[in-house]
Amino acid sequence: FEPAAPLSECELIPDFTRITRNPEMMEGKASLRGMRATVSMILGLLATGTSKEEILEAYPYLQGEDIDAARGYVAWRVQEREAPLVTN
Image 1 (cartoon, rainbow, N blue to C red):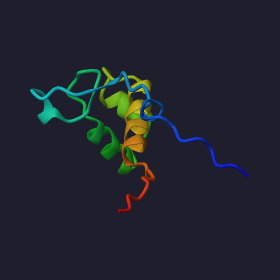
Image 2 (cartoon, rainbow, N blue to C red):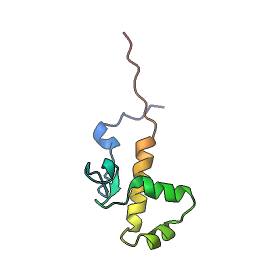
Image 3 (cartoon, rainbow, N blue to C red):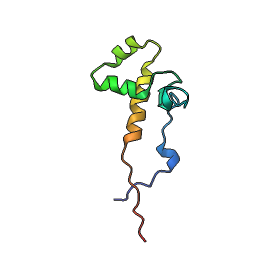
Image 4 (spheres, rainbow, N blue to C red):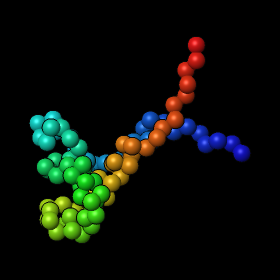
């Protein structure tokens, strides 16, 4: 058994083109496509049991791909990463 080769930093960062940040809007929070819908708002709704369909009905300017991107972004941000220990 050989461990997998380590990924470069570039390979660890997925393409989240739907996730945007603007320091002058929504206090710089991660948002969807430059709109005032934040990733945290979407995740909060999902966490309280609101379905994807209900979110899209309540926020018609959003698309299903926006919700998927929000989920993926949060999963990427909270994933555990192993870092080598530095010894002296």
